[in-house]
Length: 368
Image (cartoon, rainbow, N blue to C red; front, top):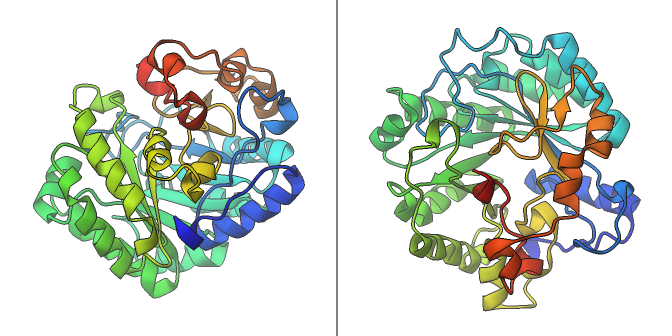
């Protein structure tokens, strides 16, 4: 991956956090994991570096693959964390690791009328804040406010360069056009953005063109997400193993081709296996944690649901508990659920695989 992906060895947690923040500000990427599994790590080594806050189940789209099974714009808000509860949650996360990356998402987070206040509260506490959004509600005024608050950037989903195909998948006419307008508003305001592409049977062959397009548009990151069939996507068909190899192989080979834009595979830890097969000494192979494409579920990453459940990953319903009842610190540090991810005893195909220490596997796929 050349100069776009530095290597962190994690030998000093304090130094790693500083290096992490510098790298995030360059590419909007969360920090690397420390040492590998089975090395005698303690709770002090398992700091939350990335927390996804699903703060609403409301949405203005009807995407086929939505893991949250997000509902219409006016529904789904009865049990959401209140503004004050969101503030309290963010305060509690700060007690464990002030300055980590918070991804504010949903549903569509920009539907919440208090979302800018929540983002402002997080930024004032020193968190790096990024939004995960469909981009449709971003206009010049909103983009300017986000910049003034100190939001680092917006992750905007684009599933095809064919507007009709994107709109069908997203379930609403005009979704592609509105997303592109949101990207242009970000550009005019100097708000960094990244493009999120979900690899599906209907679009995976578009990936090279989408990467070129995102780079030309000025994206800082191109994240390629791979389906975990949960929520509304439970009945969808994932790409085949052969197609996985094709897509991931392309991502390995194209790393040096896009100056100023990081290209990453998400929810596909076997990405590292392909990188290792190509070059055991490559930066991808040696990089750890989020920077290296490995799964951080329950170790350095967690998700909070709209009603306050703390889960290791958005793609599994397994919960450590609810932050309305137990503090974030207690759930993060003492949960048996999270400890099972930190000291795993892999079985089945992952346990028998020769690449276990390189890849680590995806825990959501066997769970669901």
